[in-house]
Image 1: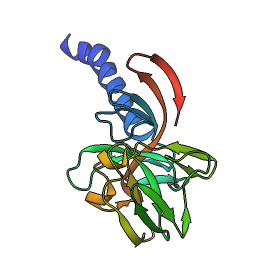
Image 2: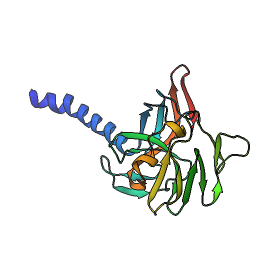
Image 3: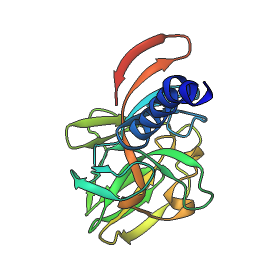
Image 4: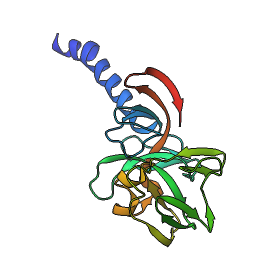
Length: 197
């Protein structure tokens, strides 16, 4: 009787839990934003959908890619473990391998070109994406002529004066990125929606 209960009741539940956990590990997940370090793009309490296949498909519960896809690019909002504490963080990729980057009063220059958006004083342009910055607390620590090694990324918060980011914990290896944030699917006060990042 007990063996039958295990086979018919418990085993299907365990298989379902494993499949669900494996999917969260390798395919898609969500992230809860704990602070204002990415304001105004993300605010504390936001729930963000994360595509874990954006840069490759991994063996569940590992960082081993079985299918390579795109590499993280400038402007992507990514989820990764902090090199300083192991805490899960969400930040914007502002420079990739080979880039030479400077940051002065919260404003970026990459490979000699300012990213300032001509249409907005507190905004930067990453290709066709315009990103608003929060400089209410200043720009935070600056960077002078940092060359990013291949396979490494510089990540910063959009709230430049109030973000624990690559200026403090250093560069992040591409292989440490769990996935790319796609959209805010829940914001306190606004409810459910789909605000693409």
